[in-house]
Every structure is written in structure tokens, then in C-alpha cells.
Length: 117
Image (cartoon, rainbow, N blue to C red; front, side, top):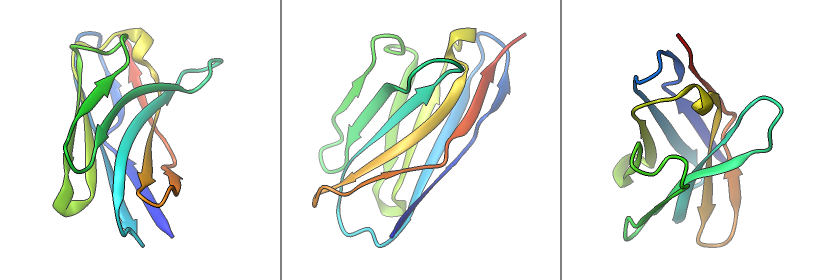
């Protein structure tokens, strides 16, 4: 079993920054890639960013490109999401997602990020 624990959420003013972390633990044999998703109130969950675990290639949703940066720490099985120039529309519950090379898919419990003055 794999556990994903997100941290780093909170309340920030527009234009501010937050850094989310997602630490994976448990029976991790081989991570293929990790992603961040978010879900705003009354909306569907949407893709935010992804990173491949071996090569480190990244991909972002257009809505966050240039403002958010995904990164990883292979040694500690942790993925980060640095969120800058935050807007009220970035307010959401943020979830991390892990896919192993064997095709197993895991989700974190989610963490709230709120952008408000």
C-alpha cells in the first residue's frame, strides 16, 4: 500500500505564493510519474501539472503555465508544487497523484489552498 501526504496549503493574498509538498511512503517499488490536480468548489477536478520520475520532464495546464513549477526529490519520494502570482481562481483543494511503472494509481487526501484578500 502507498500513502501520499500533502502539506503546505493555506491562505494567501492575491499575488502571493504557496509551496505544496506531497510525500509518498509505503510499498513504492517504482514511480513512473506524479501529477497535481485541483478541484474548486462546484467544479470538476482538473489537471495542474505533472513530472516524470526518471527524466524529470514536466507538463502544465495552460492556466498555470509560467506561474507554477513542479519539482521532485527522488531520494525522498516527494513532489513539490511551487505556486507564484496566485489568483483567487487558484483557490481549490489540491491533490497529488502517483502512477507506478506497474500501472497502480494512488491519490492523496487533498489540501486546501485559498487565495483571498
